[in-house]
Each structure stands twice: as C-alpha cells, then as structure tokens.
Image 1: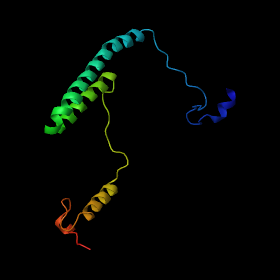
Image 2: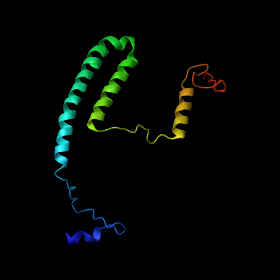
Image 3: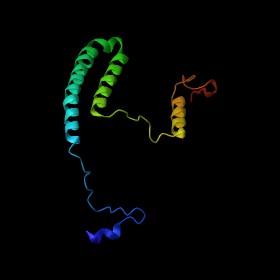
Image 4: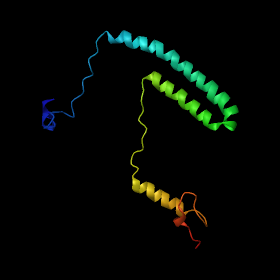
Length: 131
C-alpha cells in the first residue's frame, strides 16, 4: 500500500486508492435499530395499504372525476408519510440549472406562438401581428 502514497492529496492527505474502513459500531446500537425496525415496518405496510385502498381504489374511481386535486394531495400525504417513517424527514425541492434568462426565453417564445391577437400571458404591447 505504500506505493500509493504519492497519490495522496497534498493539502488534506487523503489517499484516493486506499479502501475506506467501515465506521465502528457499538454493540448497544443493534437493539435500538432492531426496535426501530420492528416498530416502523408494520407502520409502513399499514400506510402503504391505506394508500392503495383510499387513493388507488376509491380515489381514482370516485374522486378523480369530481376533485382530481384531492387525489393528488392524498397520494402526496401518504407517500410523504412513508418516506418519513423510513427516516427521510425533509426533501429539498428545488429547480437546478434554471436561470432567469431561460425563463425569459420561454416566456417570449410562448408569447410568439399565440395565434393572431393578444396572448393571455403577454401584455398589451406584445400584440402579435399576423404574417
């Protein structure tokens, strides 16, 4: 392993080719993890069953025609609950790589693709003349 020491990062001393040792675990953690599994696993299956029953069966057949947004929110709540039970409490929802210039280009292209007259998204000065 000494032959890879020349590849170490000079600033941090990290060797990229050496295997990473697993973190040491105390024996006291195993009963806690087993207890969490025993409590969480049935709850996950109960919530998944309720989601399948209430959203996929009843919601899709009855509510989708009347209130489609309710079905979407019900599904979101059930699936977020399952993620929370698995330990994912917060998921950062953001757009990556969208700049103001891109949004402006999209806005202007939407204004130009409207047929003769005023666009619903564009102002009065953005009147589109027929060719």
